[in-house]
Image (tube, rainbow, N blue to C red; front, side):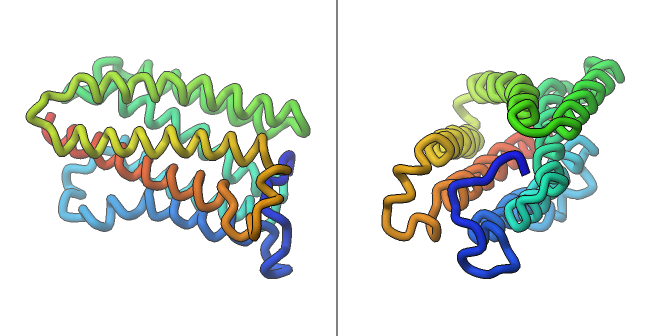
Amino acid sequence: ATIDWCEGNYLVTHYVAEFFNSTTSFFIVLAGLLPLVLHRHLWQHLELRFLLAFGSIAVVGLGSVAFHGTLLFHHQMLDEVPMLWTVVILLYVLLEQHQPKPRHGLLLPLGLAVYASIASCATSQQGGNAQWFSFHAFFSASEIPALCLIVRFFRGLEESEFALKQLMRRGCAAWLCAVVVWLTDLNFCDALKTLPGYDHWNLHAFGWHLLTSCGLYAMMLGLWYHRLKC
């Protein structure tokens, strides 16, 4: 892999490289699957875009399990490439959220698919710092517009939609906290390592993974609920 996270390797078992990073990745799987399981009575109203969104989140979680469990490059790609596609799918959901029928026809999904394909190739065909930069550049270039669209969606909600606003507010807060936690663990690893037992409660596992799971679950559930009313 092109990165080794702050958690110590093979501390719990010699079968799993980053035990806590790997096991907490299952929460991301749950974030993708739980909405479908808990609200299976609404499957007849489930549009393909939301099925792809929930499914891709679950795939990211499984890829994260494999990546942190092995720290192998091709397993890292099972984590990062689905992340690129997930945020692109979320962009499509947000851009087509308010109209009963797609406003942009096939041009939007085709354009997003081309972008995700280029990003996937650029991310998976390089190594070292170039790979790290490529992934985060492409991911940020789609994540930031998606977050801006989520904020716009939130601001456009009526005051009467209090429960939905609360759900979206909590989802956004969880996601933003997750980013802060991720950056803290990445940039201050040496200092964090001096804390007692940090390997067993590290921020990447119990901060980033848990908070992103909660954030994605809340925001995607809110978008799906709103879409059902369109």
